[in-house]
Length: 171
Image (tube, rainbow, N blue to C red; front, side, top):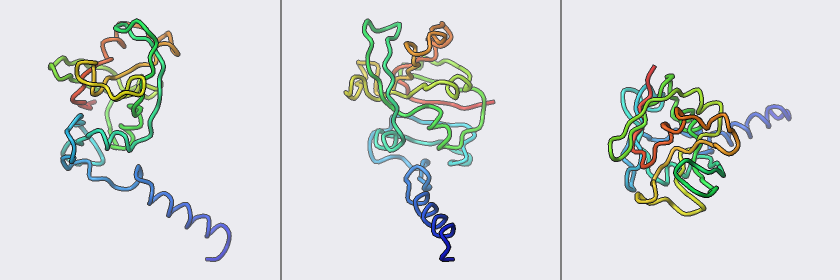
């Protein structure tokens, strides 16, 4: 057990188990801070239930920055948050379709495939500032429209839900 390979294996195992992303989290418990997002559907993390996320839980996941202009903004801004694909992976989501619902009950359905192919994020910050409800926050689905002009289509614009409150995963 003192071979270099065995030591490397033990070191990597310890690192993996100590990493918050890979450690088992209680996604099904209500967070200590205000609830921002509920994710439901077939989730390996939460058999028969939903995952509940507040800002600290979202911030504990790897963050991605996207600089883009949207159909609703006049400037190219910097948006940051967790990649949608990363959140789905961490929760162990199974399905092909997402239904995104906003605080005003606007709802739209779109395929998960685009979120897996492109760095679509659940933005919680715009230009390093936490987004408020009146500024399309606290969560806005952002597509990287500047980097991928092929995403500048009505179907993707409809999926850029702001004031996001829930995601439902289905087949």
